[in-house]
Image 1 (cartoon, rainbow, N blue to C red):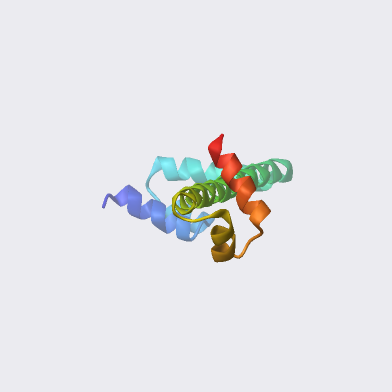
Image 2 (image 1 turned 45 degrees about the vertical axis):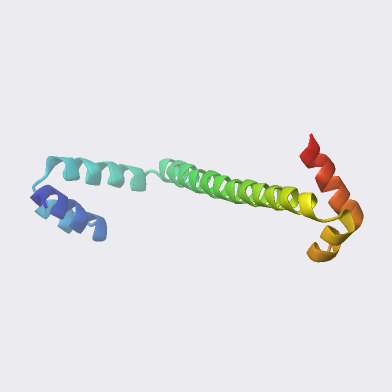
Length: 111
């Protein structure tokens, strides 16, 4: 590992003036100065935090949507397979749902 990477990891673990002063890397010094500027300005700090939180929320929503889409596709595939072998009544009984719900799902799949 490069000495600069080691310094960066140490700085990330303890982002203090003392650790920053010991670092020889100019890039780490610039990072530290920028972090100090952000911390000194409450408005800027809030802006960064809000942006960071928004990115996390967007990512979490995307993951949740992906899971829902995956589950929907799995359910559709299951319903296709079942409808080829079983009656609507049998499918409703196996899945423990109403016959009308099975009918609606099959209609949606037919589109």
